[in-house]
Image (cartoon, rainbow, N blue to C red; front, side, top):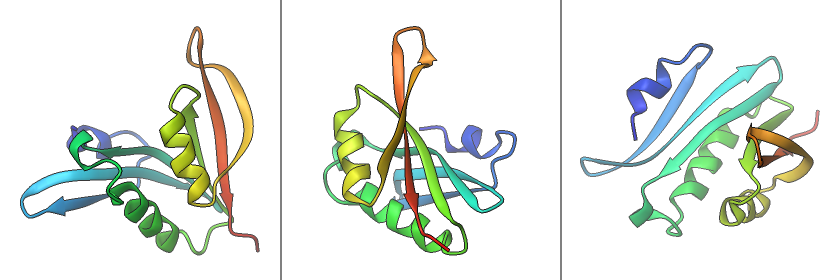
Length: 116
C-alpha cells in the first residue's frame, strides 16, 4: 500500500489510517464534493481481512461524514466479498456501470444515504 501516493492525488482531501503498533494495516482515501462523500479507496492488508478492520474504517468515515447527504463508492462487480461488506454497513446498489474499470470490467455504484 502506497498511502503517500494516494494522499497526493488531485482533489484528495483526507486519508485515514489504522495502525497496529507500527504496521499500517488499512487505510481509506475519500473526497468531499458538496454534500456527497466519495470513498475512493479502502485497503486492508490480506492478513487483516475479515477481522473487522474495514468495518471500523467505514464506521469512522460515517462519523466524519455526518454533515453529508450520502457516501458513494464504486466496486468491481467481481469483488463479491467487498460488495457484501458494503451491503452489511448500509450501502445499496444504485446502478451497474459497464466497463467502468476498462473493457469487460464492470462496477457497481453503491451509496449509503444519511437523509436530510
